[in-house]
Image: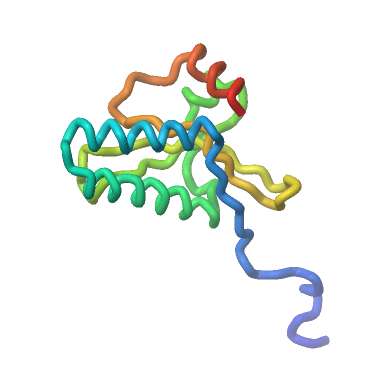
Amino acid sequence: MGENAGSEGMSNDPVRYAVRLSPRAERDLDRAVVDYADLTGDENRAALLYRRIRETAATLSENPDRYAVAEHESQQFGFSVRRVLARLSKGSGVAYHLIYFAVEESPDGPRVSIVHIRHASRAELTTEEASEIRAQQ
């Protein structure tokens, strides 16, 4: 038997997920950047915040299940979601949770859907907020 016996059709390449922001998450991102610019008066740092959140989202294209299920948010949404923290810079208090779920099969192939972007210091997501976010999907 050859070295590849038993592995026909199997690939060791990691699954790549398409990462999509829902319309609601896009609005959340825009609002976060505008609010930060208004609060600080620093449009360059606001632009950096935008890039950091987008960069963090892009990391979800590989192994999005590496982050734990967000139990509270999952309960509020009624389905399993995860969250990842995006920071303006290392150790920065400016941080946002990207709330998302991953599906293996969709018309586009494996996909991560980011449904909400929320400042990390905000109170926990309520059932009403989750219902509103679901309705906007």
